[in-house]
Length: 401
Ligand code: C6P
Image (cartoon, rainbow, N blue to C red; front, side):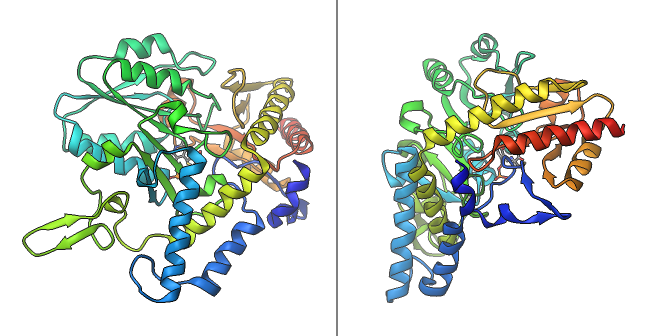
């Protein structure tokens, strides 16, 4: 994968006079030149609002935007482009489902199952919905090594369970949750299943039909695409029955002061001028990773993760969180006697970018009995040399405390 590093100009820059070691990929990935070029090209040579103009540029921009939707459809193997809604990112996709699905499908007393390892983006929207609907939130617990307790999961179902929402991959533990099996269990109980793919779509082949999930969410910026664009996949028959999330241009069919009818899918959920520059650049990013091969990327990152886990486990005072076999691209840890924020700051001065803090997963931090953790996370361009640099830097910090 070394040869792909040259596609990412930022990777050759220095910070504090040292080579950058970028290990904060779960927060956002760096962008290959083709993605940045696609943004420039769109603004320099095609820019026009989509779905509105009869003029040449508008038609060309519209074609690119809709071609991008087809690229996303193919990438996640949705049945139809009607099932691919462009949003601002995972967070907006999850808010859309909580608000719109909640409105259409959830009634007082209905239950939604979440897991203890959910990101705040998959917790707070449901709590906001609780202000409008007296829904009950149930939480799947996990084992100490970071696996969801599937027996406890099965026991959470009641005749009132309507939906399960679960991170496909934990942004802290790297655990790859058994989505296919969990979706089948949900369906057996007459409930629907949402997979938060923010941390899986960038790292492995994600096929919504194979996983049999009813909704899938992800962010463009975590899969080498631009910020500000993301995707909600939803089964067409469900999206059809859900009300619009926001009102405005694009999402209407006919408006009078008395009554408004809505556009067909997916436009019903895309009020206002869409991020057509972002959608085009996202498609370029997805084509880029597809050309490398998602399975190759997955294999490389699993090897890096296993290597990092082994090397870091050997550091005295090391506490690793999430030790599932085959975990994905994330290593969260604490070193005895060093606050994670101090560690992150010291590593930064050595040119190594990691994330520290609660990782937008405070309930998971509480479950692990800590306020925060340090986290290194990998992408296709990372190398074992960079992990060696991380380990050496941690050792150096240890000696300072
Ligand atoms: N996690 C991290 O450093 P947005 O911010 O909308 O692109 O993604 C939200 C989100 C939802 N679910 C999961 C599992 C996530 O990991 C994230 C984003 C980043 O871990 C930023 S907090």
